[in-house]
Length: 142
Image (cartoon, rainbow, N blue to C red; front, top):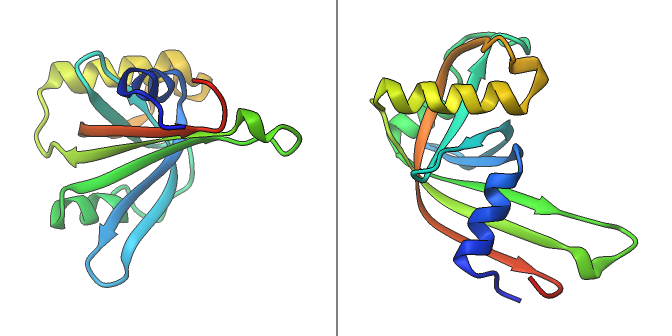
């Protein structure tokens, strides 16, 4: 069953983990698991943190978004025992290369409240994308 946009947005906002897919110039779709936050005005923030080890603070997803600002964020719920509870939500995104500091700060604050490892805001930066469209599906009544 197709989810209403309101239900899909609600489920997106209730979660903090999904798969961000950007477009690599050579290999195409480039999915990566991410933590994220959603602002009240329809933006998604994905942190580039100092918590997990990285070879560089500039990540491939940033280069991908600089080359093509389109992306998608997929969030899903799966239950092996009860398929009537399956659902997924996909947000079509557009990268905002120079977001206002107030928006970045809001998203960083939301991440700090939602994820204990981010309480001290250990971010190099927060990638910001505008939600262009949200769709979703559920096996049962939404």
